[in-house]
Length: 392
View 1 (tube, rainbow, N blue to C red):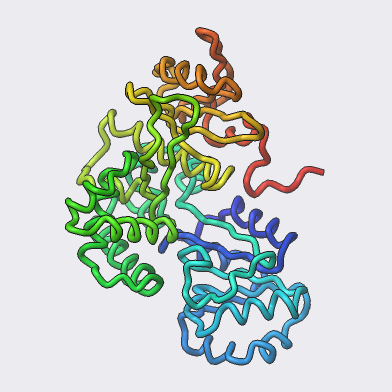
View 2 (cartoon, one colour):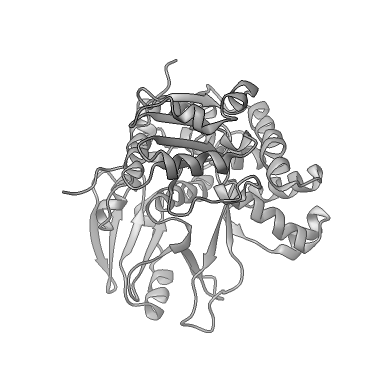
């Protein structure tokens, strides 16, 4: 089967090149970075896992002198090179007419070999699992339950049924190829026990003391392992939003596994029940808002009475937008949203639901709420879509 084009992300890479000569494409193993890189027209692709590539790039100037301005060079798994930061710094400083796409599983700063993180010389693009709004291209239709249950790693998404062998191998490879090499974590059993436990608890709050007890690790070790998982995009931490009320939850972040297929696998699910779909849908909405805002502006809100808003987005000034994730948009409990707005009145309210074909607004009990699906989020929130061409 021919690979599905991901024009959404190709356009995003091309836009990033208008600002800087180097684009750092990160994402978890098997998410499709190599396939995407090979879709760039007329690009010169180089697999840095190969010893021959290392020998070819041993003298960067000799190699780079042979390419004309405008040439696109792909350095896949560039951190495998002996001195990748030197190569990329030379490109940025001495060959600004070239365009480079460098790929890796983590943020660039996490790789010990990068003594220079290329500040001001690069733009970063994080490739997530297949987004909900991309599923029509991948599956020939929306097929929400398939996306939730199979996950968004292309091989698993397109398989006839989820494979325990695939997900188990992914976890083993993630430790061996990313965590052990990048962070020198030596306790395979302890790390994997913690990772699997966090996947089973995905969408819930983190209790470091309880996690340490269950995995027989120290609390500092748990914290360092979780930091490694977030740097490599395997987990997303969502902090609590607080500051206006004494009864708000302030300490514990929520933790989301990067892929719903892995979450289902670790929970031992052999199918989806109706009550499972809501939690997994939160993961897909989080993917969408991460693409729009990045990690630093996304929170959740909960008070000690148990009222919760799924996601809170910090906007300009004192404005905070509230997002509720609902499979059925008619099932919103407005008491939590009302409690939140009593503390933070500035901002807009959204219900994000896959059941909505055309976004609309409702008003009830003094609250105005816009209801939409993830493809419409950028428009209703007044943002350019990720990957869209800049407005003229």
